[in-house]
Each structure stands twice: as structure tokens, then as C-alpha cells.
Length: 271
Image 1: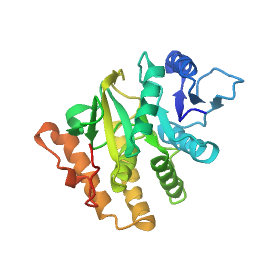
Image 2: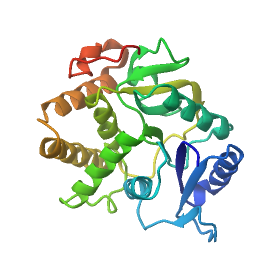
Image 3: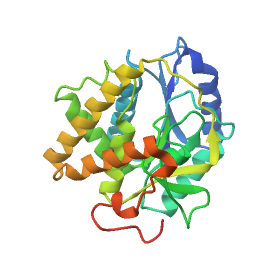
């Protein structure tokens, strides 16, 4: 068993990229599961038919499998349309970093057409990990997280689905990056972007941005309720969401101090 397991969403338009990713993960001897919504029918146990849903539903199903059917320590989700030639090498780098630094909660590569790459999320360059920078939040198009963060995210999504949020009917995926990034900071852990790679992600999307904003608000508000019901007062989560959004909009004109994201007064010894 590898330290990580990668979940890859596959549909007809990204089938070629999915095959590339699969071959790379086989080469690296890393665990993976294809969430298959394409026309291809495969007998492989690593190709699982997907429900008639989009990002939220695929992500929820991936977390469900990870939490309830694996013992892997690192959860990786690849939405299928990010392209990088050396997925095998990058997956091994992810595993190495999470093993080296148990305070890494969430990690994501830089990507093209990503509002959270660079100035939209940058807090501080890492002094201990080459190419990494502490950031407000990552993009869920390709994201890795340690098991504890994945378990909390899954528990939130399960609770929310039982309390009026229909992830399988929603279309965008917005807001979940706020959830697991805030969770990491609430647990005094680090959220990193990785500038050693810049994956190609195409411009545009297959969903309506106005609907996506409404879905994002539903996700964030339901997570605030979840945190208040299961953890502690929600005012810290609200503060983090506010900081995250301000950074996306103001970019380099907004410099974030560590105390603005580490709200428990405990900072990692090394960033």
C-alpha cells in the first residue's frame, strides 16, 4: 500500500488525460481509483462507475471511500482536467512532503487559470520546503490532504447532506477549498501551494458562475453551522473565510500576518 491514494474524476472530454494519469500512478506504484463517468466500461476494480453528479458528488464519494475503505495516510483528488507530464514524480513528492512534515494539512500545486495561485493566496514563502509557500487556501482541482483533514471534511459533508445540502445535485464544487483550508488552520496546521510545478488547467468551466457563488455560500454557511455544532464557536471560521476572500480580491495589496490565520495563538515552529 502506498502512503497516498489518488482519486481521479473521468469523463469523455478528459479520457486521454485520465489514461495518462493512470499510467503514471502505475509507474509510481501508487494507489488510485478512477471515478468513471465516461462511456468506457472497464472491468478493472480501479475503475468505479460514477453517480450522475459533478464535482461535489465525486469529491464526497472519494472521501467516503478514503475514510471507510482505506488506511492510506494521504488523500489526493484530481478533478481530471489538470495536466502535468510527471504525475508519478509529483505524487512521490507529495508523499515525501507529508511524511517529512506532519504539520502539512493541505497541499496543492500552482496551476494556470487558478485565482489561488500566487498573489491570490500567498502568505509567506516556506523556509524549510523548497518551492512551497504558505497560502490562505488551495484549489480543489488538484489537492492533497492528510488523513485527519480528509476525515473532518468527510464528516462535515456527511452531516451537511443530512441537513439539507444536496451535494449530488450541485454543479460547481466551489467552497470546499475554503472548508478544508480553514480546518487545517483551525488545527494549527499548514496549507501550502507548490510552485515547483505549474499544472495546466484550461480556462473557463462547464457551469454558471452565478450558481457557483450561491453554492459556495451554501457550503461555507453549512460548514460554519457544522463547526459550531461539533467543535467550538464559529467566529474563528467566519474570520478565516473573510481573510481568504479578501486575499483573493486584493492580492498583493493585502499582506497577511500569521496571527490572522493561526487564531489559536500557536504557530508552527517552521513555516
